[in-house]
Amino acid sequence: MKKILVANRGEIALRVMRSAREMGIKTVAVFSEADRNALHVRYADEAVCIGPPPSSQSYLVMDNLIEAARKTNADAIHPGYGFLSENADFADRVKAEGFIFIGPSGDSMRMMGSKLAAKAAAEKHNIPLVPGTSKAIDDVNEAKIIAAKIGFPILIKASAGGGGKGMRIVENENDFEEQMKLAVSEAVSSFGDGSVFIERYVTSPRHIEIQVLGDQHGNVVHLFERECSIQRRHQKVVEEAPSSILTPEIREVMGRCAVQVAKACHYTGAGTVEFLLDENKSFYFLEMNTRLQVEHPVTEFITGLDLVKEQIKIARGEKLSFRQGDIEMKGHAIEVRVCAEDPANNFLPDIGTLKTYRTPKGPGVRVDDGFEEGMEIPIYYDPMIAKLIVYGKDRSEAIGRMIRAIDEYHISGVSTTLGFCRMVMQHDAFVSGNFDTHFVKNYFKPEMLDNNDPAESEIAALIALKVLRDGKKNIHLSSGSVNGHSSQWKSRRAEYRD
Ligand code: MV4
Image (cartoon, rainbow, N blue to C red; front, side, top):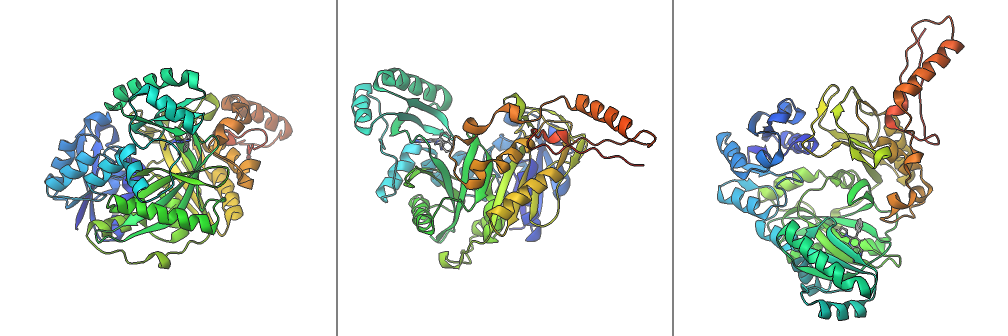
């Protein structure tokens, strides 16, 4: 493998290219007209424009990607995450056109893309599942009887859904029929597949996922867990490894289950097996994500492995160079997603130019980003500006380091989730490790953030300084309010120079 085309953009395209370069492999970037000056384009050895800004006309157009790969003589295609990364037809097409797809087979993706097929496969291997049906239900009356047996609240899920799409909670029997009809029609319109199934609704779960790696020789290992419970509308906000709640015993059993799920679909490459953990620390298999995930760096920190290099080696047909017993975890890693969103305004995506953009540095800090100061955040794509990942000898050091790193991060020109993430790091529930998937809903109120008009407070501070320091010249102010800290968590700086 001499040349990899990265069918993606932004931080993940750069992240993949960095590992390829370290392995002596050339890289090809693809870009839309909105990304002409993007960092991943400058970083790559070659770059090909694949269409207009909307991803439906560029990053999602298989023909254009294949043509770019052919034109540049690439041997392999890495899909990153999002876009076509979990599209089974794309994986098949890449292979049929004579390229190596850096990821699992189309068949593995198809099996795990169907929640029902995934559950059926897991059931065959005696993997714990949430009590419910593992077949599509079409008869409302039959479903009602099953629901009564399982007990309310019930969750109706679309088989073709995932990541929270097409789910409905039903509190009691009276609402069941109506909710099921709505769920089916929603599944038809969203996924073109009206298959739904029901499960007992686990009311306060933690979301824990296991990273797996499988080679083309039937070897599968797991790389421990990531705790992903802190999320908002199914978008993860904070991820960490290891989870503060897993015991070594649960970790081992969960890890073994994840390996079995991967083996059940003949998985190759890097994948993630998702579980729910309930109040009694019972866990249940949910679904498998057949791609590299946004939060993979926390696993890289605690295991010392480079997951992209492992993906590439697996795609080249190499055997895994380690066995389960060789893999150890050490220390603690936390990731926060830095998004161009306004936490004070219902996390509405914000667009604009990065007027100030300075990243944190120093021991144990990693920033995966795709922007530089002065660049504009395009409106066409995901609002994630960067991932900030820290590593420490233990959880407490990692939390302290994350707060320090957030305070060193200076972004102005757009609202970001940094201040919100700082709030999480200092919250008793997070620090104690006693939280679930409802963390944001339960504990976050916009009033916690400093949502004063930054310009206004800057002027006030300037006047105050002038009064206090009368006689001093060249007053220079730098406002820390760009991170939107609350009064309790505020770190407003007023610097002055003589
Ligand atoms: C559940 C659940 C409770 N009970 N299934 C959401 C995403 C998809 N992977 C499955 N999800 C859930 N399935 C049962 N039977 C709660 C969720 C869920 C959730 C899971 C993980 C992380 C965040 C979540 C937020 C809301 C609901």
